[in-house]
Length: 128
Image (tube, rainbow, N blue to C red; front, top):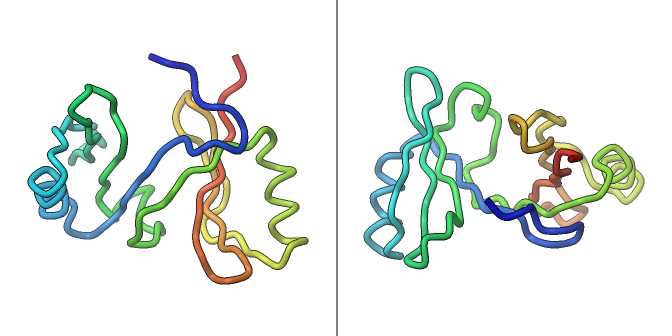
């Protein structure tokens, strides 16, 4: 697995919706992505893979830890220090929509809203 991209780069795309299976099938047909299931206990979310074999996006059920995620494509922007970035969000007129949480062993993230109302995730990769 390749290392995560550096700060300021796009690290991931995620879509969290109530009808994840239907939306998964839509993008599989429209874009040509292949699907891998990601076990989440009693259900699975989905990793979407491009024709070159690179996993490029996730489609998730709006339940469990994802219940508070907005139903929109979320771009995950890489940051060096999530705490410092979250302080800058508040100081810059934005707000935290989904508080900081763990992304397994990969790092941690939070979803924020900028002053115009656009939503983005800020992701700090785990330190190695």
